[in-house]
Image (cartoon, rainbow over all chains, first blue to last red; front, side, top):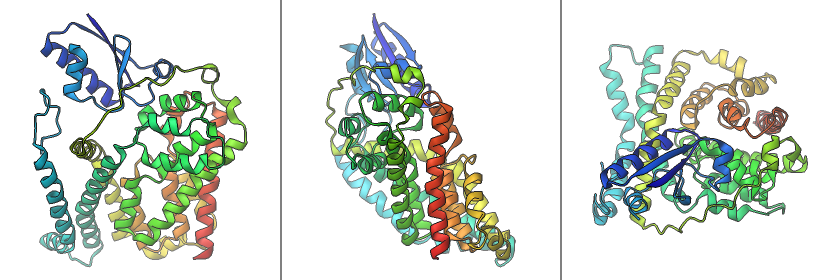
Length: 78
Length: 352
């Protein structure tokens, strides 16, 4: 079970990122719990300044814009 | 073209050579099309059952000519900007600006504000991230003002629709206002007017992201992605702006324009600023209006003030920043920026 956090105030791209993660996880057969962090304070505390940011099991892997699909697969499969 | 969609497997999509060939080819096609817009627009207008020299005919001709022109320009500018900005990121900018208290931190912040890609929806985390990294508040404000104020979309459209002289004036004064406003606010020691939780917050270190190595094709993809995202979002504003511009061009009598927005009426500059604040659109929507206003003889200073106010002082942006700034600080922010805009407006009305 992987914990994936999506950091973002709730803009369109954040929702799109979340959908991408769920799709990729389902396709790869990886069990994930996706959590959206929308509170500005928590986003900043996580060291994210460009959104959406993605952390997998507590490690920040991406910030700013939609993630690359191939890389996303890599983070989830690792 | 569907190449930039998120392909399920790595390196699927168009091969590299197609990008190296396709992008310049698309550029040439758009350029040639751009050169043919006047005949195309006249031809379309002639198809309609209205007299070309009537009010309606003038308005329609303006609209039919401006819509493809603005959309073509917008596509080109957004693509080039997207590619250039792929070399910058808020994280890198933060590292460059951190701890710079010297005087030239302000112009540097303004410059990076123009070059750094960031969407207004992440301005709160960005603001906190900057301030907690030790970037002075004033420098942060210079960054935040310059981003929208001297954005490449506004400048590029101004260049294409109104001419290089006014685009240059706008660039110089927009940049100066962002720099000086940040400097003034830096001197005012406004840290105490941040929301309490922001002042006490010691944000974690910026996440150690692996340094991404992008190929040129990656950057071209980013450019194309930006075109789809931004043009897909702002075209409605563009049509609305051109619609208003067309109405002004076709129906508003010049005498009336001179009375309201002419250089003689001193109150026209503050009025233009006040009208501009609640107007929520973006540069792409406001420049066609500016084009029509100037064409009808509106004073340059008044028009510049209106455009700057619409772009740089937006109500939704203030509401977002309300999470981190007290009302008092927002009021100071508006007052300082508005003063710069007013000064620019009065200056140009006086010297022209």
